[in-house]
Image (cartoon, rainbow, N blue to C red; front, side):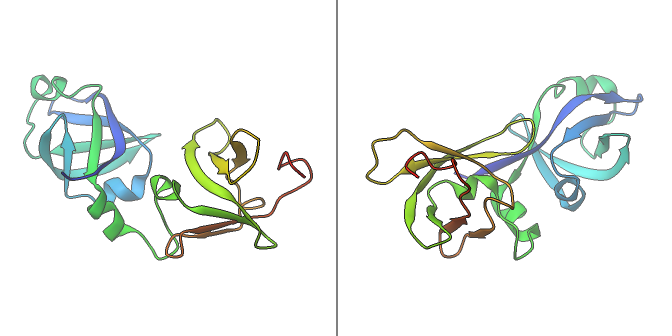
Length: 168
């Protein structure tokens, strides 16, 4: 089964010709997409333009408002393989961080990434410590604290500050 990545959500219609007003997480992914999956239906992107904080998308298969209303409120997905083809060398998916080993800047093993949570300011890494009597350690996913993410080596390096790790 194919793995899907959400890249946006159909919020409403735009005009009467069946264009969709889409809230998106990454404009570059929408611009690069040819076909998307919405509600288990493959739709072909005819054109994309941006207006304020939304993408306006015209799908070839949808010609009026009534057809689009069936998809209102639905997420738009791309196959993970398609997203990965668009990515640059230094880019990675947040979901790819789960399971990576985490080390401090002295190369001491801390644990593995258990999950990644979204917050208002930035993502939060939840790290399950190795052989510690503590619960998961939460690390803000910011460059100052997480300077190195190496997906190929399955390794993350953090630069702990005072009080970041409960055992320090």
